Image (cartoon, rainbow, N blue to C red):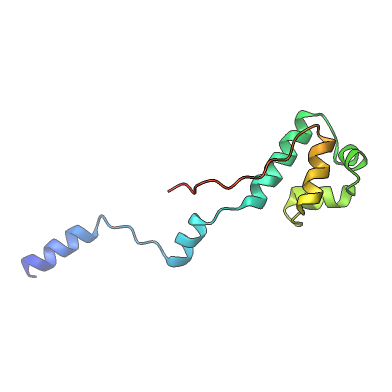
Length: 99
């Protein structure tokens, strides 16, 4: 084995290879997961059940459940209704991505 091959073998021992799919998955930002977590934590902090939040917001309990389970992506109108029912203000902003 040549010295160059030995050098390559040693150098490559410390290299991590990430697939394109894995890199894309890592870099993707899941805004719906963040919204989901915010709704669940705000509802829990307010000691409200999904049914109580549904009654206050006018959003069906089934849709509250779907949002919290990640099976439904709410519109801004729906998010505003939920925020109002929780006594919160809905804030939307664009921020720099983390590198």
